[in-house]
Length: 355
Image 1 (cartoon, rainbow, N blue to C red):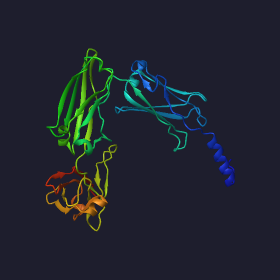
Image 2: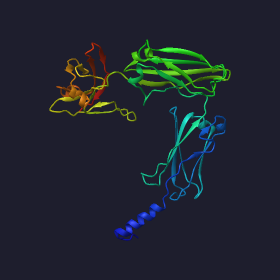
Image 3: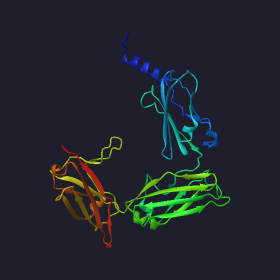
Image 4: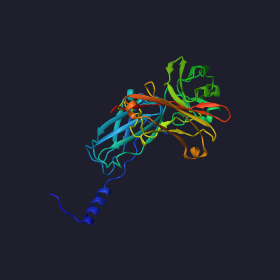
């Protein structure tokens, strides 16, 4: 039977409930020493534990999430078995060996309110036979334009496979066929605990502007052969990709492509070209191509100080959505600089849904 209470009684009851709910504490890994987990220590698996706190209950559900810097992930669910005891979860050796490099550990306790059910994360470094290669200067998967003309450092982090006399083969494949290289190295005595750093000169970056690079390496030694994950980075260009004012990004999970939304302004489809990398007095050509013949447009506008101040130039397509529906549209920009140079933007492609 329920009881009608006053506002003051209600608030007092809510405060009492909140007082019994302690914040979740981070999970830990028994095999870790000073934040590091050796390869040999996980030959028999890994043990994860997190504390039981006031507010938890026997039988309540939790979900442990593991994710590592090499892109691997694992989720383990369970229920709390005993009151007032650490929750202990065991990983098999096969599961533990999934991870190498940086490992992030976090759990969800489902009986807490939505704002409180996620625990603090814990980070570890897991020793492995080899790690994914990285470019030091990359930011969010992109090599910035600010370093393209200077060169970057490709780093292979010290790992167990990089023992003395190991042979390392490094492959750099650019979207421009002439901006590729292969390098071979032998780990020298006394250097097995050091990262391998390869300087990648501008000649392997500038031709790949607005494109991408892939890189991978192999290690051969007396103890075996290993191959790293294949990594991909985009290379920024001088201009930013043009886009529509109204569009929806790609949905990888549901398989939906990036889409041009059917929203117009006074019967025209508004498009934008960011002016980052442009200067006043440059001339922009905006090129739009539909799937069918007769759906091509080229607009030319000088870059003004007002364009640079607002961050983009506007181009309006005098065309109804009905003639584009069910197909992809492609658009790009070309800028003729006052210096006489000409640079192009990345190409954009959006799908126009049918009615």
